[in-house]
Amino acid sequence: MKHIIFYLSDQQRFDTLGCYGQPLDITPNLDRLAKQGTMFEYAFTPQPVCGPTRAVLQSGKFATRTSCYRNAIALPVEEANLSRQLKEAGYYTGYIGKWHLATNTGKSDIDIGPHFDYATKPIPRHLQGGYDFFLGADVLEYTSKGRGGGHIYDQDGKTISWDTEYRSDFMNKQAIKFIESHKDDDQPFFLFVSQIEPHHQNNENRFEGPEGSYDKFKERFVIPDDLRSFEGDYIESYPDYLGAIERLDQNVGELIHTLEQHNLLEDTLFIYTSDHGSHFRTRNNEYKRSCHDGSIRIPMVFHGPGFMGGNKIQELVSLVDIPATILAAANATIPNDFDGAPIQETLSNPTSWKQDIFVQISEDSLSRAIRTKRFKYSVKAPGYEPWKGACHAMSSDVYVDEYLYDLERDPNEHDNRIEDPAYITIKEDLKKQLIKRMVDAGEQAPRILDSMKKTDS
Image (cartoon, rainbow, N blue to C red; front, side):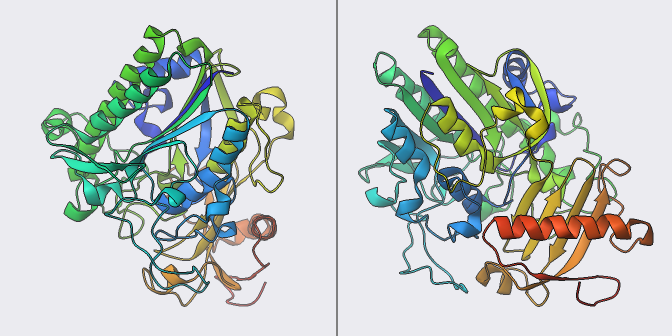
């Protein structure tokens, strides 16, 4: 293995790529990479919110095991295992874009240590995850807009600004500059590109595609089936959302072209995925933080050594598997305390791969979920007010079961079977499996109350 590039979008649904069924031809570059390489049909996030997911990607552990269970909790320095292990394996490491792991604020039921806020300030060197090269901002949507300019910081705290360029274009150009500056090095590099698109612009409460996106797609887009019959803001938001994704695909195409120009593509593992999806306010009052596939199911495409051949993998994979996967590709040491496993095993030994995905949910609610190929089961801690109590607590001793979906009969999760007597046995089996996954992730085995009987189980 020579080089590794991990390209992360933000809040991107799996079905926005053509290879996952998107009817509009907006992702030709990613579709081509999937056709040549490997796509994972069932890829998921273990935590549908930005900061905790990024903690998982840097640590290889579920978010509660690093205490980064919600936004605005800094990644402990000792948990920066991805860059550390890659550097020990001889890699030069670089990070570009949204970080979201340097600010430590807010109330919590655990001791998060001293409070500090780098959302709109340069990130100190010791909080940059151990990367050799660092260029970004902790909360990128606070220092920039999708269109309209902004700034980031280099590893020494110097401000790097742009005026009119679309944000993902600017970030992608920085990634290309990184590649070009290391194209002739004997040392392999690992580059983590963290785009914020197509995430909505928080301070303006809207999505920002490139200029003209809304008019381009407003009459053409197809509403995903899981959003139909629900209130939400997908009618007004989806055109710009698709525009941002189309531009991301163009960015990927330019980066891949750069690798081709310098004869690097054949020896580079390129991974594209997202931190979580978006349900467009159909399941709660915001865009994610729910157990539904609109929130947790993501695109995942690999291209490069070990993943060529047009594979379509049906096994369930999670972002918690990504750090182990990258380290395996780099022939680096995988720490024994990682919660994930190398995804390479889905190609070499698929029959031994896990049969379910574990999800932790915070902030809007304090919830836990398990997803198998056929079923989705989710529980919620009682007594926590969204965005208040749920922000303060990392876990609970008591939960109440909330959702049960039969995905074979109801793939769009419109029919909650949690109180259906026909599913009692299935629910009990899923409940036991969920508790096991919680314990495996370092949580205490909870009591899960039955939503029908309101009694201990």
